[in-house]
Image (cartoon, rainbow, N blue to C red; front, side, top):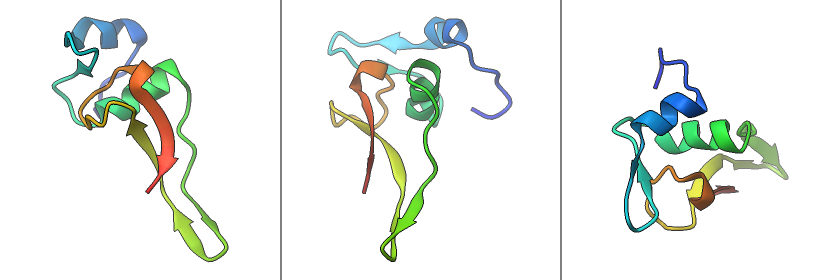
Length: 77
């Protein structure tokens, strides 16, 4: 996804919407791009009480390539 200036319009032109409700882009990091476009920045990972917490874009649909912003939320491993 590097080298492409993503906008909501460009994203919507390229996204493939599945009848299941999941969306797909033929690009890597599509869920992260979708989250940033529709929901805002993804916070950096952090250390707390000697443990490292990596912030991840998670999927309510449990479908990792899905980039439907309604299916995305932030969490940690």
